[in-house]
Length: 268
Image 1: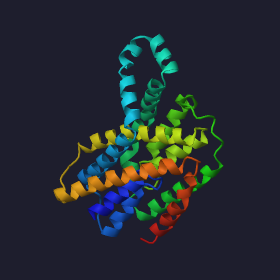
Image 2: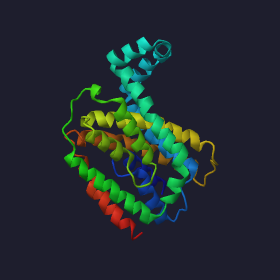
Image 3: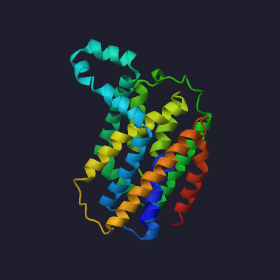
């Protein structure tokens, strides 16, 4: 069971099929009332490491650039100059900005939204919604350009907001954020890069919130390790695959799977 749940987390966290929705369905099939907080935390740490390693070069550049923030805050002129001429500094600022609506939605609506959508039928509806959204990306407008200058503060806020809404099981975080980026004119690889870098603060925040809850577990240490490794390794492979699939903007490729699982959810 630990291997299966790790596999679902690794695939669903990056492929636009909703890991949370699939985990709810898996819990129902395995007869689990709810996924343990500690085990859920371990799975997310696995996928966090996968993202961090995949984008390790971008992360190193972002962290180096963001060391300029203290000086930039003191001098508005420096902030404006850095934002205009330093691409990685600009991207780091936009990740911080995009994280604000995600955090607000998560803090205010996490409990009611996740509690409301724990039934398999509700997950079926949200998976069908994800599938329809992915299918609609076939008609997304042509990208405005490949440079990061096309990513603006308004786009960052919009993507951050829709990322917050993806706490609902069955709504794919990667599918919604990348798809919205495509609709807003971002080049597919830029939309994916921003989406996954933006997910890092969200995953870290979710893990920190989990530390305030009971971390007791019925899983053995080997089962926790297996879930962690499977989620990380499979997650890295899924991320590698998705980045290559969406190069020509074929995010709609995953819509039939979401529709199929969404329909099957009504019979679980």
